[in-house]
Length: 341
Figure (tube, rainbow, N blue to C red):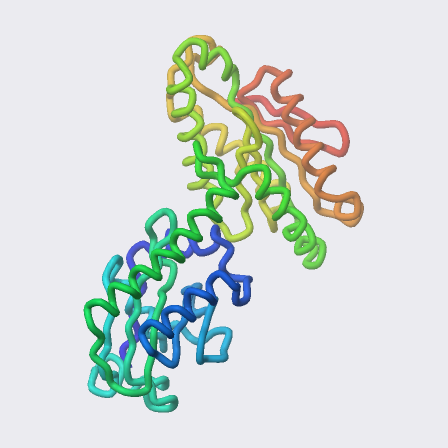
């Protein structure tokens, strides 16, 4: 058996899987319908929409197979995603040196496999739509075209889901997604008793920037800030939200206060280092102010995430009124601003 190598963009690919929230879900009707059409149209006893998550293969829809997951190393789909936009066809796995001693072949009698990569809205391969048979087969070009068309149906569904949860300008999550997701993250934090940080981030003098340079340039600044946030906060569970206008929020789980404070000040410095000219800023550059609050004890968890965000917002207010381009850390309840530089 030859396990498929991980693609060069595996980190980005895995992040796309997590953004689409395909890891914790079970089978869904919309995906099951596509799998049924694939099995029926190609006259195959087994079909599936699979998602590759780290070292696992997850079945998000399946016909003719009853298992939630399997090892990625044993999967055919791990090979299929390497050919983005193509189709992996294995007519008889018993004769293919990559698969002939695979447990799926030796123990379950799998012979035929055809799989099409399913792409994320960012055009990253998150999994496959595949059909499987226990006898050798040579699919027609029309059958493979149908399989690709059905994979495109899944991709369209993923785009619609992404649009419903993300801000179209920055690609970060929107307020609606935050409100749906924060309860789950908060329950997990309470269960595991790990600290949670909330960062409220505001672009300094942004109205003046828009009035001076125009809204297109202003939109470009917001996109650059969003890209910087996406680079710095990449762990599973980090929530990056465009909170409104020029304001952003980041929820960072499992992060002690001193670490969160350093992350916040590093971000502030990195924005300054972008060296985006701003004539009406004291620094003559685009800068940000950041309010930081931490939940790290029983009282914090009991009072809830609404209070955490309110404290971060109050800390942001202190930072802006203390000269901007600085981080203010909430000290429950009196925030304190730290000098820039």
